[in-house]
Image (cartoon, rainbow, N blue to C red; front, side, top):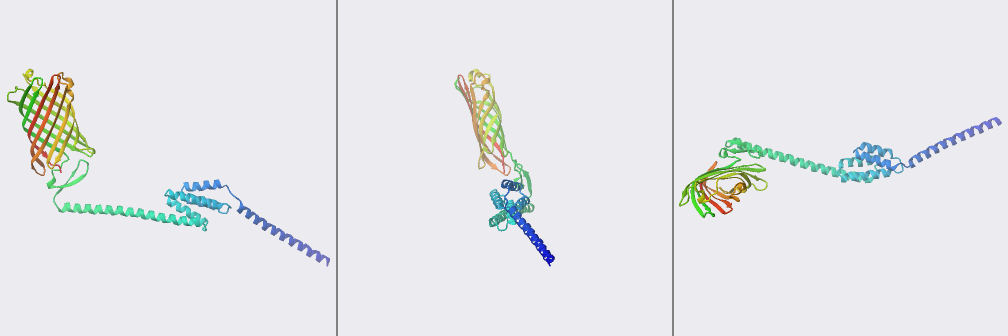
Length: 385
């Protein structure tokens, strides 16, 4: 009887001890879990990891960082910082990754309503941006189709209409012209023959004056580009016949002056720089006081190819730089202008009368010599389409 009782007591003590051990183990596990949940973490390190994920636009890295700290006490700080970075990306118009970042926060904590609202806002912005881009693309495609259709209509008209020719303009563009426009040219030219060249000469030092008659010829050329207008003014005359009581002298002149204009400023205003020579053949120079043969470089300004209807106008002023090589000349200059009055204009050329006037002035130590000239010429020029 005593042995059985002792055995029961030992069994009861063993069972009680096992129960205490189990309870202690359960309590220890619970405390460990609570301790792990309650422990903090290095917030600066977490923020740096989030920054790195945003810097690399990596949603996978961001998800891994949030998952690492999801069970910590201060996890909400990670979510708040992630949403802050997301808003910064919205401001920078990096909407695609901003939407992905907001979705990562929602995947880790679906109860974060701030993340849900932010994701909804970003998603609408992305869709609106995509719609705008698609509208621009559709507009571009429609414009391409419209131009293609217009080109097709023009080509069809060319094929079924008159015979057309393609030409290249001075700017490099190709245009089509029909047979009535085959005179198209980027050049502008005028050729003239002076039938009557009348000069009045006056020398103040010797009080000498005379009127002379002669003939002349000239050629003007202009070539425009998108940036510059190049040109050249060529002219020559000879005055053989002395009218009235003047002495028998032969006066000649010749000039070749390249010209340059800037298309963006004014295609009609030219800088002139070239050469001129005013000749004299005389055996009575001591009586007339005429300036001997005068060769000189010239610089000047001009207005050219000014059109009023089919009428063309040009004026110029040239300063003669060669005066320093002559003892009896202190300064020299020439100015003049001409107008072409068309009599007949067709598709290719215009023919008319050119009236011109010029004045050559020599300043000398003892006075001045003035040569005023009026020209009546027949002019021919091209018609530029």
